[in-house]
Image (cartoon, rainbow, N blue to C red; front, side, top):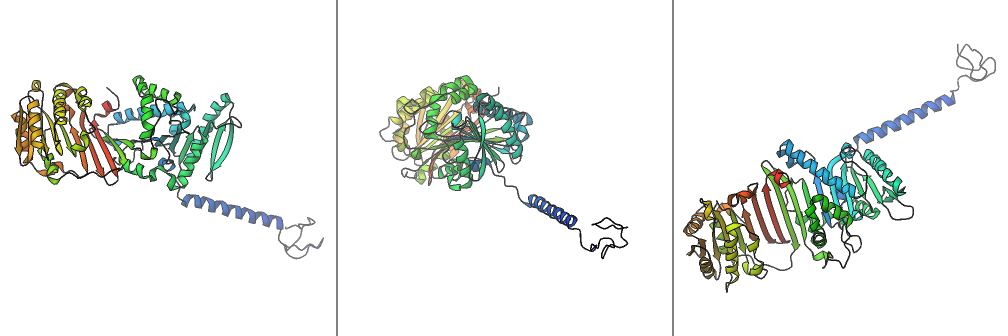
Length: 526
């Protein structure tokens, strides 16, 4: 039986007035009704929020989006399996690379003073991409932990930030740091340091990336770059031009402003005698101030840019490097007839050198600075004589081709042969023939050929009759070098191919280097 909500008496009906007190039993119970409505509303809001989070695309950005344009040196590592050229390698070689990468990254982290174990802790949220950049701090050359910015792709930003809190807290307790919060470009930054003094550690977890530096200003610069494309390094012309020739399937690449890189190399280069450990120790402890031997000179805007990249192949490791500098003067393209000089290169050539616009380069050389002390064995004397003879010519030819082929009888050493094109070619070829052992020279279709022996001349003539598609070169190529070291020097059998191309195109001057060899040997393994 229902009861009266006012007096509690049992009633025979749920509507109308109560017989005992007169309360209208047909009125709703306000408290229960409001509670039901409130719970329903909360459930709807929660459901809508969950639905939105499921339907909304997560905003995840690559680490390079956070790189400020003012970076001096950048190293980027990408170990993600999808689409990586590393999948071409056996699992054992991939493990060697991964171990070396973790070792190097751990030393960078250790150099900041951060107590973070990359194998045990960061492996749970590391997304496979890591970028390390260094910056000038005032006039100082970019070395030391306060010049570094680390950006890592993460799969779980909350866990990454939590692990960072724990790692820095252990370090901060000993140093007397306090934890504070800052904001930049609408993003929260965790800052550790002594109260009222400079930051000692700052980090932010944003859009799938963890950004870390000992200097709060670098983290702020990074967040500003993410919000403004004009402040990003990847949007700068010099960055795009120097990385443009590098392969897309690279798993490691480096970029540097040469004005800042050269003093670093001069100052820290001797530390390489102690290996990478010694180099990293010197990097984190040495200070290069203006006025020291490592001081950079010149306008940074006029400096060149250097980049190199590593990419894997089934049977080796490719190393690509490129140097770029904005165009300062126009260079004349080689004449069409001079360009055809490359067709005299025999297919079995162990080494090949092609130079167009030779008079422009001769002024940079001298007999005393030639390669006579850098080339091994018989080739050293041959190339040294060739260079000296060429520089001594009254009129330097427009283009030159030099080839080195190993004779079947290895005791006789390699054979040097080549060709000249342009004014003064005949005289230059005759002069070199007089300097070479068993030297010969001949004029063929307007090209002056020379060689150390009749066999060398025969190979040049035979090569000119082969299909021209072997060496299709762009008109902007000024220097091309290709070598198969194992074909001439068995001791370098692990290095299967080397090439260098120097070109001058509409954007500026480029120098592209290519190496290919056994992965383990190029990674420093026996």
